[in-house]
Image 1 (cartoon, rainbow, N blue to C red):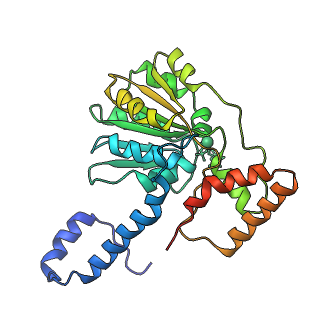
Image 2: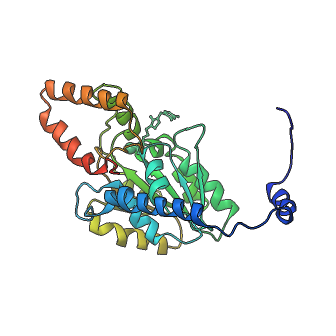
Image 3: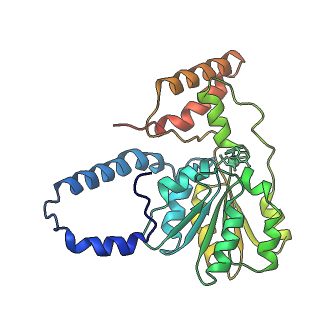
Length: 276
Ligand SMILES: Cc1ncc(C[n+]2csc(CCOP(=O)(O)OP(=O)(O)O)c2C)c(N)n1
Ligand SMILES: [Mg+2]
């Protein structure tokens, strides 16, 4: 380090502002705004269009409905896994919303404890815990903390009965996924037993109503969305190695007699491949 400086970015920018002249040429900014709009519309939008009838629920669609309904100044906490990707892609920043996640450390099960902290720190604010079933199950006991302190945390559980992100990692590495799927769990029943308003949603047309009710409830609420375990996030840029790995994994799935499984997986994800 040549010039270590410890300071406040806001104060520094204010001090620098009088020293720079305003650039009136907006071409550079507009080029990137257009590019971003194009990307959001064509690529990210493609995941949610025509998804309102798909069963099991496509998580991208559910995330886009959540984005519509959540408060303009909500705090979102999100687990490490596919649900983190859905949050990053579909929950629009409004300038007033806040996002908390285990971005660098990548630790699972963070969403609910983060939400508890966020709700204690912001008693009147809407706090939404976007949880994966894997992460949620790891710190399930925190549900009792939510109930005990009557924290009005809204838990939106993306329940695909699998460790989705690890499933994807195995596939791009050329391995048919193994040991990641888990049996279905009645999280709605567990939450209800703890005295928390809870609703299980299997049909995409029920997502909106369930979320509206959860947000309207005076206290904690859980919405268990049964989502497609085969909907895996496709990175914005795909490397040759990843394609090779995925193809190899798929051949192994087919050779193991699972052509139906391979077709199902392709169907769930083909529309997710980014198009230029
Ligand atoms: C404590 C911890 N254990 C394991 C991992 C590796 N890991 C990253 S994501 C993931 C699966 C997450 O599953 P789930 O919460 O159901 O989310 P999904 O990917 O299915 O949306 C695992 C096992 C981790 N990041 N942190
Ligand atoms: Mg999962």
